[in-house]
Length: 324
Image 1 (cartoon, rainbow, N blue to C red):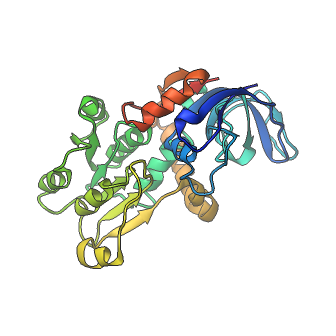
Image 2: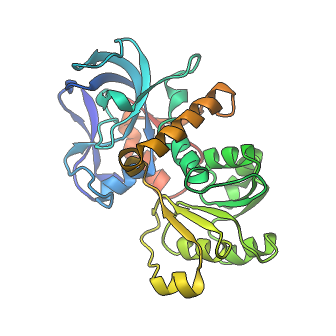
């Protein structure tokens, strides 16, 4: 089968098309004919080797796949022909076929295409977990959402407005109208040097109740400064701009707030009851039409390296996908 293989830890440029054997499902797994694969920042982190316990080259890249079940391993109840969306955190989605843990496979909603379901197991659960069980967002509060034009950012804006929050979002200027159309109350430049000051001005000096921090680097300091003292919460879910240093001195004397780390894989493994709460809420939101069918921008498998590079450069909007 055709697959995009990560040949070294030199980033997306080291992704190359290759012919590799079709995998076989082990007990508890399903073999999927991939119809569409989602592109996520975790793919970029893995391509540089900065994702903790990530796969080592050479490996088939991609962690999110949607398609048709064509074979199942022992103990799996899913019938061949079922269309599912799932996660394979060790890679394998950027290919014509992929093996997924059956417990990580979610049926594609009725009436949706496989492509439209991309994001249901990565972007929406990440946004929902950050806002509710971890971020404890309540109606009437104000939330700051970084990278609001991306797949997870767009989901977070929609959800925050659904839950009755005032949304201050950041995005590149050319993406502001996209974010406003999602319902954001205020949209600020993501690279503005006065971002923290602007947020404090919008909140009468108090700061936001909750910040979804998905950028890292110097943006973390901006987020801490822009968040309310003592009761404010900052949920950190990504670091594409690099690592940041926060000391105990900072938390005692400068940024007295709740700093929370979010890694979806760890949440699933270490707090399955919280993840279960997230997924139950997700199904409710699907059933009531709050979560719409996705409209990803698609690329051919051969152009996967270019697509990941574009995501890394923050020039894209919304969800990106690959067709094998």
